Length: 197
Image (cartoon, rainbow, N blue to C red; front, side, top):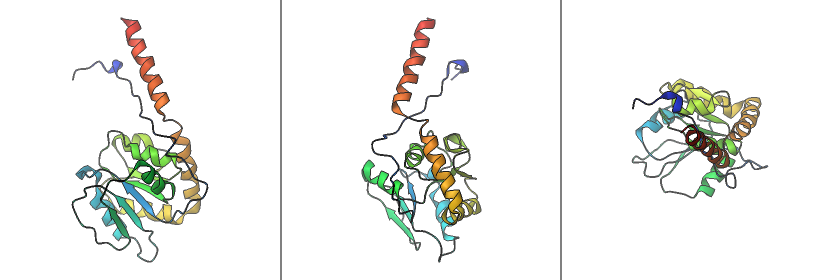
């Protein structure tokens, strides 16, 4: 677009803190993913990684993907294909052992922040906004390396110290995002541009 890069400012989205927040009593007895179906969400890799886990130890995996076009017949996997409310999504996140977003590409990845706001550890991909938001606060995997995902899921499912660490890091990272902060930064930048004229 031949834009002057000095005029580009990154301003993050916020999330609804009245819906997405930590709860004191968590079940932590399943893994969770939510997305709108698109090939870039990389679901086949997640499913293959899940199949490689020890059947006797692996946690159930809940996939909330409205309009997902295929049946999934893998023991332990529940596919929800109908839309649900934000409150229901928050409930799934609040009680999940981990939130998994294996996307090849995300422009922002709002569900990552929403899950972090509930204190849920994140497993997501290197690259694009997934890495930008999660690096240092969650587990990053190479998008198309199935063994990375299997290993990450196994670690978060079995390592209590790691889970506790990433639980706290998720809560900490979510504090960097709010709609109030987003609005203030937009206002500040627009005002700066107007003043310069």
